[in-house]
Length: 209
Image (cartoon, rainbow, N blue to C red):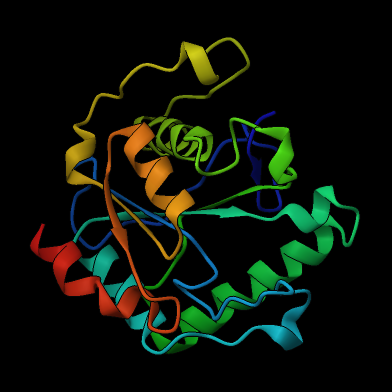
C-alpha cells in the first residue's frame, strides 16, 4: 500500500522549482489539516470548506528561502471510505496551493503525498507509519539528482534504508500524535503544533534547528 501523489503516479519524474539557495538535504514534512489549513472533525470535503491558517503561506515561503524542500504528508481516509474521490482531493490541494502562493510567492509545495487508506488497514503509507516520509525523501532526492525511480529502485517498507542525508536536519510538523509517531519511526525531528495556530507557531523553532 504505497503513498499516493497529487495529480501524478507516485514514481513519475518530479519537476522541482529552484530553491532560493542550494539544497543541502533538508526537508520539511508537513501535515496538512491543522498545519496549513484548519482541520475539521467531519473532514475538509471540498474547497468551500478550506480555511487557511494565519501566515501559513508566509511560513512555507520562509522555509523554502532557508533551503527546505516542502513535502505534504496527509492522511485522507475519506477516499478509502468511499465518501469522495481522488479528484475531489486534487481540487482541494490545487486550491490550497493557490492560496499559499497568493500570500507568499515562494510558498511552493514541492511534493504532495497522501494516504487514502482507512485507519484499520495499518497501511505503511498511513501515519503514524513512516511510508509517506520514506517516499517523499526518495522522490526529492531522485529529482535533485536527476535520477528516474522505478519499481526496482524505489524502496518500500522493509527495504527502505537511510538516505544520503542526515534526517536529523529535517523536520515533521503536525498537530496529532500520529504525526509524531511517523516522525519518530522515520528518525526525523517532530514538532507538534496547536491545530488552531498551525505552522506559523513553530516556524522560528524550525529555522533555529
